[in-house]
Length: 219
Image (cartoon, rainbow, N blue to C red; front, side, top):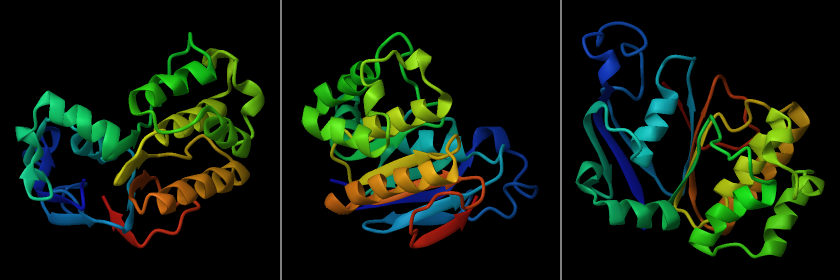
């Protein structure tokens, strides 16, 4: 459904008036013309406070506090209706937010099924297999509030993969994982992206993700 995401002179409103200062001055994203094209995978390296989570939210349509344009296949996303966004977010674009947005009062399985019931994309056995690969299958029926932050991040990753997508947006996907779990998670993501012939847009403070990115960009 989406083959190209274009940014044209996008700038967070919070940076307005600071165009000649850091972080805007040296950015390869803000106030630039930038295309994310399938099936490439992009790593956006950025320090804290430079707007990487904002960028993810802008592309996903959660926030609109920016100037410039973001286009999906040439169409300005500001013109999309609620129904268009609902369709895109279940069939074309997936997001793993940095804050994860899990429901602590629900179990691991319940958190994942909230997404999967909307998309009807994965079978229960496929979900259990993803949890097994990430070594948290024994936590399936445990409340998310009783998991470590690293375990919660793995649950959020499984949930994000429970839909078809052309672009998978990952905001600091391994920030709470050690090197071993980083490798395990990256392998699962890579397999899912390959099976869907999809693209990745990932953010990271430095290149900490064990994925082969075709293009690296400095925010």
